Each structure stands twice: as structure tokens, then as C-alpha cells.
Image (cartoon, rainbow, N blue to C red; front, top):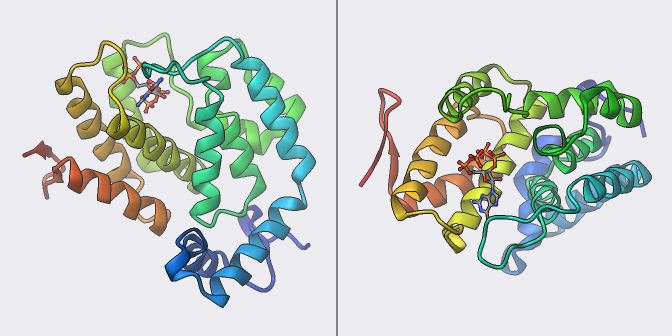
Length: 232
Ligand SMILES: Nc1nc2c(ncn2[C@@H]2O[C@H](COP(=O)(O)OP(=O)(O)O)[C@@H](OP(=O)(O)OP(=O)(O)O)[C@H]2O)c(=O)[nH]1
């Protein structure tokens, strides 16, 4: 299948068409022929690099093997990158390098993986997406959080997609259960900060942003005209 600009491909269904209709495949009452064809186009696209994607899942699983999420069930950490990749598929993303970037997105930040290793194994484009969504752990937490907002605005489209799916996954997790040791205030603060990062990525993916705004509405995070997020 011929590659288009930005790594997107699919001669029969535009990425816009896929994004608009694809998520309806996951909602039985809204399922339509167009959505099913859209899903087919996406599956063909992703399948064309299935072995590369499996290699990423395998590498991420090995690198995160001893890590757990912060929820009381101590879910295996690998569930997170796989879930972020799944959200991108739901959002109609058919660019295999973005899916790979999602699967690997925490390997540099949270394991001993280096960017050079990712370049050697998965190529410079995938490694570049991961590098863009990696925080500099040598900085203070406050500075890292501030820089995420600043960097999100000028990030590439591919990195913004991973960022949006990452935030959606984490916010859904927070909505589901409070991590061990977190107060309700800390959860609200995370929502407030995440709303600013998401705002900086606006206009990237209709589906992911709609899902995020649904959560912000539920948690009553209002992004004012002056960019200040308030919680009601
Ligand atoms: N909601 C949730 N988050 C969990 C859980 N387990 C681990 N995390 C991770 O915790 C981080 C958010 O916690 P914070 O206290 O704000 O940040 P910190 O761990 O970096 O100090 C997120 O990582 P991050 O890479 O720093 O993401 P982000 O801060 O860039 O969103 C998230 O992936 C969990 O069970 N629920």
C-alpha cells in the first residue's frame, strides 16, 4: 500500500473519514456500513506492519516487566501503553509508527531504554515520537509538568496524538479508581493540569478530544478564555 505524507496511507478511506466513522464500530447501535469499511481500511493498514507492532509490544513488555500501575490492584504497567495504543486505534489512527510510538512511549522515561536503542530497533521516526513525549526526569516535577504544557503546543501531530491518548487513559484510570496514596485534591490537580495539556493539543483528533472533554465536563474542569482551568 502506497505511503502518503506523514506516514498515513489508505487509498479508499481518508484519515478524516476514518476518524469520523471508525469509533462508531465500537458502539453497536451506531455501527454503519461506512464505519465497518473504515475499520477494514484501518485493519489493512495496521496489518501491513503487524510484525513491527508485535516487536514493539514485546520490547515494551520486557522493559516494563517489573513495573506496576499505582492503582490498588497494582495492574501490570504494560497494560497502560497497550491501552494507549488501543485508544489511538479507536480514534481512527492508522499510522503504524504512531501506534508503535504509543506502545513504547514510556520506555525512555520509565526504564533504562535509550533513544539510540529505539532508533536502532524501530527507526528514527518511531524513536522521535517517543522522545517528544518523554519528560526529562532530571528536572523537578513542577518544571516537568510546566514543560509538558509548553511543549505540547509545538509538538508534532504524531506526538500530540500519543499525548492525547496517554492523557485519556490516565484520566479514565483516575475516574475509575484513586491511585494509592492520592488525595481527592491531587486527583483534581491532575485533571486541571491535564486539561491544559489537552488544550495545547486541540485540533488533533476529534474522537480523542471529545472523549477527554466528556471527562473534563464530568469533573467540571472549565477551561476559561484566559487559559486558566478552574474546578467547580
Ligand atoms: N492515573 C493513573 N496514573 C498512573 C497510575 N499508575 C501510574 N501512573 C502514572 O502516574 C503519572 C501521574 O502521576 P503524577 O504524580 O502526576 O506524576 P509522577 O508519577 O511523574 O510524579 C502518570 O505518568 P506520567 O508519565 O508522568 O504521565 P503524565 O504525568 O505525563 O500524564 C501515569 O502514567 C494509575 O494507576 N493511575
